[in-house]
Image 1 (cartoon, one colour):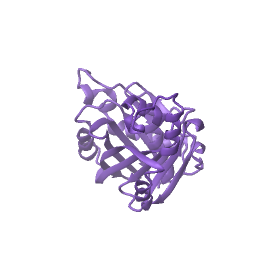
Image 2: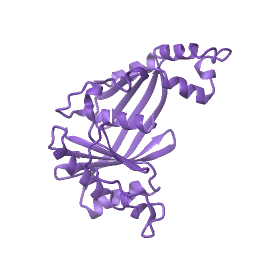
Image 3: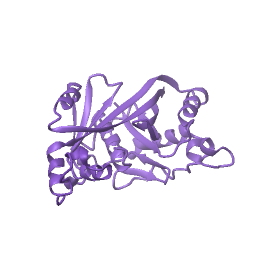
Image 4: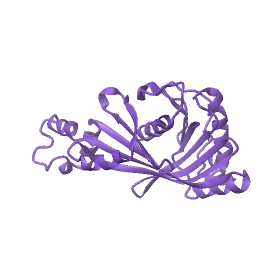
Length: 267
């Protein structure tokens, strides 16, 4: 596969997904190739969660285990637990991608590609890994020449959590400034007024999300340029996930999404 770059729009207008769909197919000449759907499920380690409760100076005493804690304490306890993210691309029919991490490692972990049987196995291993929640991305995929574009709405349950735009350079095999630059420019071209406020607020500019400044800037933490309303994700320190920085695979793509969901507290 080719190198990918993501742009996450935190506060899109309600019509953004279909506005972009029309712009790509009717104005820019992209060919719609189908649906784009990504599902990411979060599990927490039962053993470390129990230890966190027991270390809470009796905080959980008298409550019926983890589920008996108030919601805000459940969230705090999960943050102290080992976490496992499981990601599934619907267009990759036979594989899933997992990323396990814990607070002590500061986000370090290993991305693993596995057969889809892993998802069924995790569901059965409730005494080890307990399901917490899921995030989904649902939208449309397009292609034009050497490039693919995918746009989708991010949801956690029924709550909308923004819009995700992914660009892929189909012929590029390694992450570099030369491979990311055209992707950043392509996202800006495709998004058009959405990033400059036209789609979000019209000519008057009301409610516009603001232009994301200089998508080509490289950031040391692996996340791209950011405004209050949007963040670009391209360069990463892939060694944090035990991935080779000189190549780009489906595991690298999954790690981009894991990183975004973690940074934005989507999961």
